[in-house]
Amino acid sequence: VQCLPLHLASALQLGKKNELFIRGHKLVEEYPQQAISWYAVGCYYMCTRQYEQARRYFAKATNINSSFAPAWIAFGHAFAAQDERDQAMAAYRTAARLFPGLHLPLLGMGMEYSQMNNMQLAERMLLAAYDLCPSDPVVCHELGVLAYKNNQYAAAALWLRTALDLNRNPGSMLAVEPTIVNFAHCLRKQHSYGEALQWYNKALSINPGQADTYSALAFAHHLMGNLNAAIENYHASLALKPDDTFTVEMLTKAMQEFAQLD
Image 1 (spheres, rainbow, N blue to C red):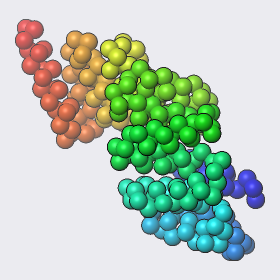
Image 2 (image 1 turned 30 degrees about the vertical axis):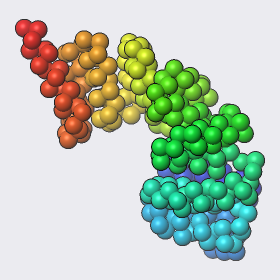
Image 3 (image 1 turned 45 degrees about the vertical axis):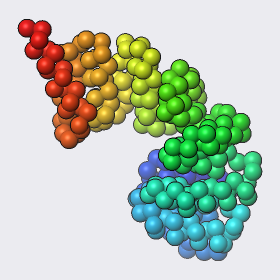
């Protein structure tokens, strides 16, 4: 029973809807008075992005056992998924109060404060989470994102590089792809264009359907003066996301610059 929350959270992260459905059904059938059973049902609805239903079952789990930490944290995540920040913060605060040694509620609060552009409180929460669990790559990633928002690109690159180092053997490379893209952004901001290109291409090798990554790759080529490559990748981005204003404007600019070379 003790390993079930980790098993269910892992299945949720991996998108195993059928596994969660079967496991939740069996647990509710056999142990309807246990919080873990309704937590499992909530995880299934989180996996299928039915967040209101997920919150209903996470709430039921916390009503059965008010000290069941996974349900409180998942409750916060379900609110955060729909940008219901006040309710998410309330759930995270409850989890932090009940479980002061757990870093996940602090991480959740830090991410919410960052979304609200309250950078000071975001940094305080994320650093507190890091102090409790310096081996969590998600904490390092969020600290990197926060530093990037504060225009501290060197610090952001250090945090994101640390996150990548901690994630050397991930269960799914898709989980690492956002960190790779953000690291490439930091390199570009520091004018390390060649290295940024390498990381953008690595991200695209993992997840090739990302219009924003093609646009960022094109922009790096553009800044280097590689107009042919820039135009090609701007087109690739627009094929996936035709209404992106930035990419349309930069493609127009690149084509005008290319025409002036003739």
